[in-house]
Image (cartoon, rainbow, N blue to C red; front, top):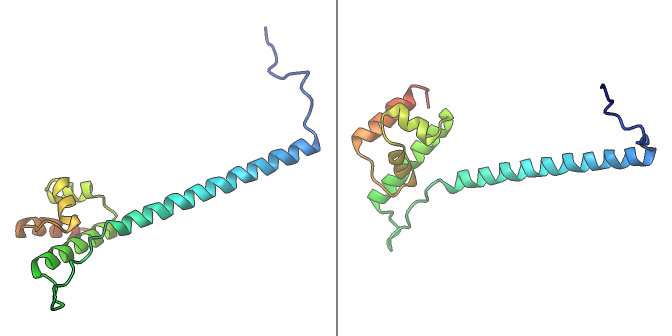
Length: 129
């Protein structure tokens, strides 16, 4: 009952077919490298897009104090969290706050409480971030 999986009618590959197969394999490898590079570039652009911008200055050229402070705190949290290599969910779990809280603070549009900032700071200090 032991039938062979080889097809006796199958002809061996010729030199031209082997060259074409090698060319196609090289093309697939090149395309995969391009896809990896594009994904990496996309991730970097999304990372920088996530950093909140400072609010525009008023007519005198002064930044609004409260909104600017919110953005500065947000940028510091983002920088320290990324330095630690943590996701928002991981930082939230280690600090004892909800992930939504970290997300809102990192957007720069919400003012953190002193208690929340203290929790985040303590969690980030544990890893030296």
